[in-house]
Length: 338
Image (cartoon, rainbow, N blue to C red; front, side):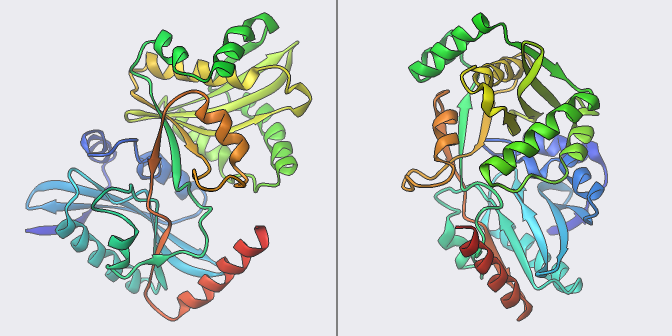
Protein backbone atom coordinates (compact mmCIF):
# COMPACT_ATOMS: atom_id res chain seq x y z
CA UNK A 1 0.00 0.00 0.00
CA UNK A 2 1.32 3.46 -0.93
CA UNK A 3 1.63 6.09 1.78
CA UNK A 4 3.53 9.35 2.33
CA UNK A 5 5.53 10.10 5.46
CA UNK A 6 7.70 13.02 6.50
CA UNK A 7 11.44 12.23 6.66
CA UNK A 8 13.54 14.06 9.23
CA UNK A 9 16.54 11.69 9.33
CA UNK A 10 19.38 13.02 7.16
CA UNK A 11 20.96 9.57 6.87
CA UNK A 12 17.78 7.98 5.49
CA UNK A 13 17.41 10.82 2.97
CA UNK A 14 20.97 10.71 1.68
CA UNK A 15 21.13 6.92 1.54
CA UNK A 16 18.03 6.91 -0.66
CA UNK A 17 19.43 9.56 -3.01
CA UNK A 18 22.67 7.59 -3.32
CA UNK A 19 20.71 4.59 -4.63
CA UNK A 20 17.98 6.37 -6.63
CA UNK A 21 17.72 6.39 -10.42
CA UNK A 22 18.98 9.54 -12.13
CA UNK A 23 21.70 10.53 -14.59
CA UNK A 24 23.10 13.55 -12.74
CA UNK A 25 22.49 14.10 -9.04
CA UNK A 26 19.33 16.19 -8.36
CA UNK A 27 21.21 18.97 -6.56
CA UNK A 28 18.16 20.85 -5.30
CA UNK A 29 16.84 17.68 -3.68
CA UNK A 30 20.00 17.25 -1.60
CA UNK A 31 19.49 17.45 2.15
CA UNK A 32 21.96 20.31 2.45
CA UNK A 33 20.16 22.38 -0.17
CA UNK A 34 17.07 22.13 2.01
CA UNK A 35 19.14 23.46 4.88
CA UNK A 36 20.21 26.40 2.69
CA UNK A 37 16.56 27.19 1.91
CA UNK A 38 15.74 27.06 5.61
CA UNK A 39 18.56 29.48 6.41
CA UNK A 40 17.04 31.87 3.85
CA UNK A 41 13.69 31.76 5.64
CA UNK A 42 11.76 29.27 3.49
CA UNK A 43 9.82 26.44 5.18
CA UNK A 44 11.09 23.07 3.92
CA UNK A 45 9.45 19.67 4.39
CA UNK A 46 10.96 16.39 3.20
CA UNK A 47 8.51 13.65 2.22
CA UNK A 48 9.04 9.99 1.45
CA UNK A 49 6.70 7.80 -0.59
CA UNK A 50 6.56 4.28 0.81
CA UNK A 51 5.20 1.05 -0.64
CA UNK A 52 4.40 -0.72 2.62
CA UNK A 53 7.71 -0.27 4.48
CA UNK A 54 9.93 0.28 1.43
CA UNK A 55 10.94 3.85 0.56
CA UNK A 56 10.46 4.27 -3.20
CA UNK A 57 10.56 8.03 -3.75
CA UNK A 58 11.46 11.27 -1.97
CA UNK A 59 10.68 14.92 -2.55
CA UNK A 60 11.92 18.01 -0.77
CA UNK A 61 9.15 20.60 -0.79
CA UNK A 62 9.72 24.33 -0.40
CA UNK A 63 6.82 26.54 0.69
CA UNK A 64 7.31 29.84 -1.16
CA UNK A 65 5.32 32.92 -0.15
CA UNK A 66 6.27 35.70 -2.56
CA UNK A 67 4.55 39.02 -3.31
CA UNK A 68 3.39 37.68 -6.65
CA UNK A 69 1.91 34.50 -5.18
CA UNK A 70 2.11 31.54 -2.83
CA UNK A 71 3.22 28.19 -4.24
CA UNK A 72 4.65 24.80 -3.34
CA UNK A 73 7.97 24.26 -5.07
CA UNK A 74 9.16 20.82 -6.21
CA UNK A 75 12.66 21.65 -7.45
CA UNK A 76 14.42 18.72 -9.16
CA UNK A 77 11.92 16.38 -7.56
CA UNK A 78 10.37 13.98 -6.87
CA UNK A 79 13.25 11.49 -7.09
CA UNK A 80 12.38 7.82 -7.66
CA UNK A 81 14.13 4.51 -7.27
CA UNK A 82 12.48 3.69 -10.58
CA UNK A 83 9.94 6.03 -12.16
CA UNK A 84 6.34 4.83 -12.12
CA UNK A 85 3.30 6.73 -13.35
CA UNK A 86 1.16 5.23 -10.57
CA UNK A 87 3.62 6.30 -7.87
CA UNK A 88 4.10 9.77 -9.33
CA UNK A 89 0.32 10.31 -9.57
CA UNK A 90 -0.11 9.23 -5.94
CA UNK A 91 2.65 11.59 -4.80
CA UNK A 92 1.19 14.42 -6.90
CA UNK A 93 -2.26 13.98 -5.36
CA UNK A 94 -0.62 14.25 -1.95
CA UNK A 95 1.20 17.47 -2.92
CA UNK A 96 -2.03 18.97 -4.21
CA UNK A 97 -3.74 18.32 -0.89
CA UNK A 98 -0.68 19.61 0.97
CA UNK A 99 -0.68 22.81 -1.11
CA UNK A 100 -4.41 23.46 -0.68
CA UNK A 101 -4.14 23.00 3.09
CA UNK A 102 -1.60 25.83 3.06
CA UNK A 103 -3.69 28.01 0.72
CA UNK A 104 -1.05 27.88 -2.03
CA UNK A 105 -2.39 28.91 -5.43
CA UNK A 106 -0.25 26.50 -7.46
CA UNK A 107 2.44 23.81 -7.51
CA UNK A 108 5.66 24.55 -9.41
CA UNK A 109 7.83 21.75 -10.79
CA UNK A 110 11.32 22.68 -12.03
CA UNK A 111 13.11 20.85 -13.65
CA UNK A 112 12.20 17.19 -14.05
CA UNK A 113 14.46 14.98 -16.21
CA UNK A 114 13.03 14.64 -19.70
CA UNK A 115 12.60 11.04 -20.83
CA UNK A 116 10.35 9.11 -23.19
CA UNK A 117 7.91 8.77 -20.28
CA UNK A 118 8.23 12.25 -18.81
CA UNK A 119 7.99 15.02 -21.37
CA UNK A 120 6.01 18.26 -21.40
CA UNK A 121 2.88 16.50 -22.69
CA UNK A 122 2.99 14.01 -19.81
CA UNK A 123 2.77 16.81 -17.27
CA UNK A 124 0.14 18.67 -19.31
CA UNK A 125 -2.09 15.60 -19.02
CA UNK A 126 -1.76 15.89 -15.26
CA UNK A 127 -2.99 19.48 -15.19
CA UNK A 128 0.33 21.30 -15.50
CA UNK A 129 0.99 24.20 -17.86
CA UNK A 130 4.26 25.71 -18.96
CA UNK A 131 5.27 28.48 -16.57
CA UNK A 132 5.53 32.04 -17.87
CA UNK A 133 9.04 32.27 -16.41
CA UNK A 134 11.67 29.81 -17.67
CA UNK A 135 14.88 31.26 -16.22
CA UNK A 136 14.66 29.58 -12.80
CA UNK A 137 16.65 26.50 -13.74
CA UNK A 138 18.28 25.52 -17.01
CA UNK A 139 16.24 23.47 -19.48
CA UNK A 140 19.47 22.10 -20.94
CA UNK A 141 22.61 21.21 -18.98
CA UNK A 142 26.05 20.16 -20.20
CA UNK A 143 27.39 16.97 -18.64
CA UNK A 144 30.86 15.43 -18.78
CA UNK A 145 31.66 11.80 -17.98
CA UNK A 146 34.85 12.08 -15.93
CA UNK A 147 35.43 8.36 -15.39
CA UNK A 148 37.79 8.54 -18.37
CA UNK A 149 41.52 9.14 -17.90
CA UNK A 150 42.90 12.68 -17.81
CA UNK A 151 44.56 12.01 -21.16
CA UNK A 152 41.22 11.00 -22.72
CA UNK A 153 39.44 14.00 -21.23
CA UNK A 154 42.03 16.38 -22.69
CA UNK A 155 41.89 14.61 -26.04
CA UNK A 156 38.09 15.03 -26.22
CA UNK A 157 38.18 18.76 -25.53
CA UNK A 158 37.99 21.45 -28.17
CA UNK A 159 41.49 22.07 -29.47
CA UNK A 160 41.56 25.65 -28.15
CA UNK A 161 40.53 24.53 -24.65
CA UNK A 162 43.22 21.85 -24.55
CA UNK A 163 45.82 24.36 -25.71
CA UNK A 164 44.88 26.96 -23.08
CA UNK A 165 44.90 24.42 -20.24
CA UNK A 166 48.35 23.19 -21.24
CA UNK A 167 49.61 26.75 -21.67
CA UNK A 168 48.17 28.05 -18.38
CA UNK A 169 51.15 26.99 -16.18
CA UNK A 170 53.42 29.28 -18.22
CA UNK A 171 51.48 32.25 -16.83
CA UNK A 172 52.34 31.21 -13.25
CA UNK A 173 48.68 31.13 -12.27
CA UNK A 174 48.19 29.95 -8.70
CA UNK A 175 45.04 27.91 -8.06
CA UNK A 176 43.90 27.86 -4.42
CA UNK A 177 41.28 25.36 -3.23
CA UNK A 178 39.57 26.71 -0.15
CA UNK A 179 36.85 26.12 2.43
CA UNK A 180 37.72 29.34 4.25
CA UNK A 181 34.88 31.91 4.56
CA UNK A 182 37.48 34.69 4.31
CA UNK A 183 38.32 33.54 0.78
CA UNK A 184 34.63 33.70 -0.07
CA UNK A 185 34.68 37.34 1.04
CA UNK A 186 37.33 37.95 -1.64
CA UNK A 187 35.28 36.07 -4.26
CA UNK A 188 31.96 37.87 -3.74
CA UNK A 189 32.94 41.44 -4.80
CA UNK A 190 34.34 40.09 -8.08
CA UNK A 191 31.16 38.05 -8.55
CA UNK A 192 28.98 41.10 -7.87
CA UNK A 193 30.98 43.12 -10.39
CA UNK A 194 30.47 40.40 -13.00
CA UNK A 195 26.70 40.39 -12.43
CA UNK A 196 26.57 44.14 -13.08
CA UNK A 197 28.77 43.84 -16.15
CA UNK A 198 26.82 40.92 -17.65
CA UNK A 199 23.39 42.19 -16.51
CA UNK A 200 22.27 39.17 -14.52
CA UNK A 201 20.77 39.02 -11.04
CA UNK A 202 23.39 37.88 -8.54
CA UNK A 203 22.33 34.72 -6.71
CA UNK A 204 21.16 35.19 -3.16
CA UNK A 205 22.33 32.83 -0.45
CA UNK A 206 25.82 32.09 -1.77
CA UNK A 207 27.29 32.56 1.71
CA UNK A 208 24.70 30.24 3.26
CA UNK A 209 25.21 27.68 0.49
CA UNK A 210 28.98 27.70 0.94
CA UNK A 211 28.83 27.40 4.73
CA UNK A 212 26.25 24.58 4.63
CA UNK A 213 27.93 22.35 2.04
CA UNK A 214 31.47 22.94 3.34
CA UNK A 215 30.47 21.42 6.70
CA UNK A 216 30.03 18.06 4.94
CA UNK A 217 33.06 18.44 2.66
CA UNK A 218 30.68 18.89 -0.29
CA UNK A 219 31.95 22.19 -1.65
CA UNK A 220 35.21 23.90 -2.58
CA UNK A 221 36.04 27.41 -3.69
CA UNK A 222 38.60 27.48 -6.51
CA UNK A 223 40.47 30.79 -6.74
CA UNK A 224 42.95 31.82 -9.44
CA UNK A 225 45.68 34.33 -8.58
CA UNK A 226 47.89 36.05 -11.11
CA UNK A 227 50.76 38.11 -9.74
CA UNK A 228 49.11 37.76 -6.31
CA UNK A 229 45.84 39.29 -7.58
CA UNK A 230 42.55 37.36 -7.59
CA UNK A 231 41.39 37.25 -11.22
CA UNK A 232 38.88 34.36 -11.31
CA UNK A 233 37.01 31.95 -9.08
CA UNK A 234 34.40 29.21 -9.02
CA UNK A 235 32.30 27.40 -6.41
CA UNK A 236 31.98 23.67 -7.06
CA UNK A 237 29.68 21.30 -5.17
CA UNK A 238 30.43 17.58 -4.82
CA UNK A 239 27.22 15.65 -4.14
CA UNK A 240 26.32 12.05 -4.89
CA UNK A 241 27.79 10.96 -8.21
CA UNK A 242 28.10 14.51 -9.53
CA UNK A 243 30.29 17.59 -9.25
CA UNK A 244 28.23 20.73 -9.90
CA UNK A 245 29.61 24.00 -11.29
CA UNK A 246 27.55 26.38 -9.15
CA UNK A 247 28.91 29.94 -9.31
CA UNK A 248 31.87 31.64 -10.96
CA UNK A 249 33.43 34.99 -11.76
CA UNK A 250 36.40 36.53 -13.53
CA UNK A 251 38.12 39.89 -13.94
CA UNK A 252 37.61 41.25 -17.46
CA UNK A 253 40.97 43.05 -17.27
CA UNK A 254 42.69 39.66 -17.30
CA UNK A 255 40.65 37.87 -19.96
CA UNK A 256 43.88 37.13 -21.85
CA UNK A 257 44.97 34.92 -18.93
CA UNK A 258 43.33 31.42 -19.19
CA UNK A 259 42.54 31.24 -15.46
CA UNK A 260 38.91 30.10 -15.88
CA UNK A 261 40.00 27.19 -18.08
CA UNK A 262 42.54 26.07 -15.51
CA UNK A 263 40.00 26.36 -12.67
CA UNK A 264 37.61 24.01 -14.47
CA UNK A 265 40.37 21.52 -15.17
CA UNK A 266 41.48 21.56 -11.52
CA UNK A 267 37.85 21.11 -10.42
CA UNK A 268 37.44 18.13 -12.76
CA UNK A 269 40.61 16.53 -11.38
CA UNK A 270 39.42 17.12 -7.81
CA UNK A 271 36.11 15.43 -8.64
CA UNK A 272 37.95 12.44 -10.09
CA UNK A 273 40.00 12.14 -6.88
CA UNK A 274 36.73 11.96 -4.94
CA UNK A 275 35.48 9.10 -7.11
CA UNK A 276 32.78 11.20 -8.73
CA UNK A 277 31.48 10.09 -12.14
CA UNK A 278 29.92 13.18 -13.68
CA UNK A 279 30.76 16.87 -13.94
CA UNK A 280 27.72 19.09 -14.37
CA UNK A 281 28.61 22.38 -16.05
CA UNK A 282 25.02 23.52 -15.35
CA UNK A 283 22.91 25.48 -17.78
CA UNK A 284 23.66 26.18 -21.44
CA UNK A 285 21.70 27.71 -24.30
CA UNK A 286 19.32 25.42 -26.22
CA UNK A 287 20.74 24.25 -29.54
CA UNK A 288 18.04 26.01 -31.59
CA UNK A 289 18.58 29.46 -30.02
CA UNK A 290 21.74 31.00 -31.56
CA UNK A 291 20.99 34.44 -30.03
CA UNK A 292 20.40 33.15 -26.52
CA UNK A 293 22.18 35.30 -23.88
CA UNK A 294 23.99 32.18 -22.64
CA UNK A 295 25.63 31.56 -26.03
CA UNK A 296 29.05 32.76 -24.87
CA UNK A 297 29.15 30.67 -21.70
CA UNK A 298 27.80 27.74 -23.74
CA UNK A 299 30.84 27.83 -26.02
CA UNK A 300 33.07 27.86 -22.94
CA UNK A 301 31.35 24.91 -21.27
CA UNK A 302 30.89 22.67 -24.30
CA UNK A 303 34.55 23.10 -25.23
CA UNK A 304 35.49 20.72 -22.40
CA UNK A 305 33.69 17.88 -24.16
CA UNK A 306 30.55 16.19 -22.90
CA UNK A 307 26.88 15.67 -23.67
CA UNK A 308 23.49 17.31 -23.36
CA UNK A 309 21.02 16.55 -20.57
CA UNK A 310 17.48 17.76 -21.17
CA UNK A 311 14.83 18.68 -18.63
CA UNK A 312 11.11 19.34 -18.84
CA UNK A 313 10.37 23.11 -18.87
CA UNK A 314 9.31 24.70 -15.59
CA UNK A 315 5.68 23.60 -15.17
CA UNK A 316 2.94 24.98 -12.94
CA UNK A 317 -0.23 23.28 -11.74
CA UNK A 318 -2.83 25.97 -10.95
CA UNK A 319 -4.95 25.27 -7.87
CA UNK A 320 -6.93 28.52 -7.58
CA UNK A 321 -7.68 31.76 -9.40
CA UNK A 322 -4.82 33.34 -7.46
CA UNK A 323 -2.48 31.71 -9.96
CA UNK A 324 -3.55 34.18 -12.65
CA UNK A 325 -1.85 37.08 -10.83
CA UNK A 326 1.41 35.13 -10.51
CA UNK A 327 1.33 34.09 -14.16
CA UNK A 328 0.78 37.66 -15.39
CA UNK A 329 3.60 39.08 -13.22
CA UNK A 330 6.01 36.36 -14.42
CA UNK A 331 4.94 36.95 -18.04
CA UNK A 332 5.49 40.73 -17.78
CA UNK A 333 8.86 40.30 -16.08
CA UNK A 334 9.99 37.83 -18.72
CA UNK A 335 9.02 40.19 -21.55
CA UNK A 336 10.75 43.11 -19.84
CA UNK A 337 14.01 41.18 -19.33
CA UNK A 338 14.10 40.04 -22.93
